[in-house]
Length: 600
Image 1 (cartoon, rainbow, N blue to C red):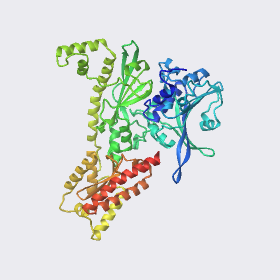
Image 2: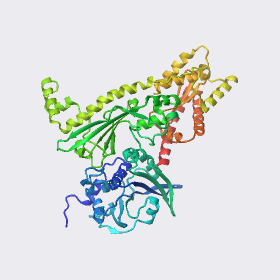
Image 3: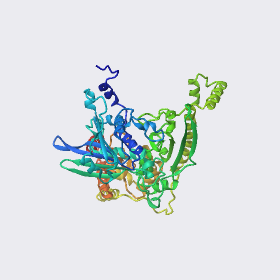
Image 4: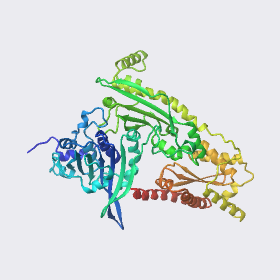
């Protein structure tokens, strides 16, 4: 009888909680293996099946696979690859793999069954892991690989990228822990993350990463086929997930390099030498001005501004593969910081210095270091100038790992000071209008609202807001200032707030539809000032993704529906209005639930 210190059944349960943030992060571990195997084509394959859910059949993702056309694995290598810590990438310090935990660890964090087929010189070997068998005590070792062909259904799914001479496919099934229920949802939540992680490989055409989804009821039917695009947080690459820039800027990069790339030669305390590179970028002023000119919302609320916000922070890149984006040097509460980018890249020799975790999701040693706090931690009195100077002298002379982290952080902070000064001037960079008579135009929905208001007034049944807005005793400047102040309180950029206020007053229209990030579950809000009715669609709400995807005519129809609600709300008594505001809040929460179920 064996007396294992940690029984396999207990260990596997613990290891399943290995801490992968999402299914996309776990999938990235398998993509790492593919790139390490010199693959030029990688596919994320999903097969959906239907199951009965109440009155209708509901699709759910049944199997997920990663295929690559890399060099494949020999029989003994395949067996080792399924052992925890057994991967041979640990012997290659220059690659994006290394820790030998990726395939089994990432797999069991998401599912209970892994089947792997790998082939070289046309000979395919197969083995598997099964959590159920391990928990029951029926599987203690990785089964010895056997010769077995790739199932026909998977060869069909792979299609033209299938090379009978070499390749690998890892298949997940019994997906009990995957957080997204459909292949569509898996892609939506993975697209930008995987595009950002592997942006250099994608941009340099070293590898193509493709997403395919299928249904498999009676036969295999393909439902989606897309290439992942690079997602560059520095916005210096072209042909990325970023939508085309407007006008003459369509072939330009969104940002421009800021200064020269910094190259720091580091020698760690263990004697290993490596290189750290720091790159900076900032939005091109002329492009920011163009977006101000053409957008009907604040630049930060445009599709370009939203992607910039999603990528805000310092990108940490190891061997060309992003590990994480950290916010330790930035503030998400300062939206203008989306307009610059910072990237720190390093070679794998410096893994220990940066504190790279085995799942390649974090760099635990990378932090902002305060030298005074550091001195106190080492037993020095930081308020005593002599003691503090002595500590600094030793710290800089000995060049410990902590010194290098401090030095890198100091370089970043010095450049951030200039970048922050630059972006603060962007709001002041309002483009000049050479035609003083030219004013921003109203949308179709706003024109319709204006016509309806004019008809009410002509029929001598104006609302209180109509009377207030058209009051000849109130100067135009006073109206503009009041509307501008109200919009600013709602979080609208000061330049846009003034533009909107002037547009309403000069066009004699008291209704405005805007897209604005709002707090909570509310789908839309209604603001009132000086007789105006301003409908604010919450760009943080799940509904906004649907709204943003439809064509302009459908957008105008949706605008009209919400403007009509706002008009009824505005023309109601105080009690009725309070009730309608409460209904709006509860309705927004309910819509959020329904859309979550629809998309998952």
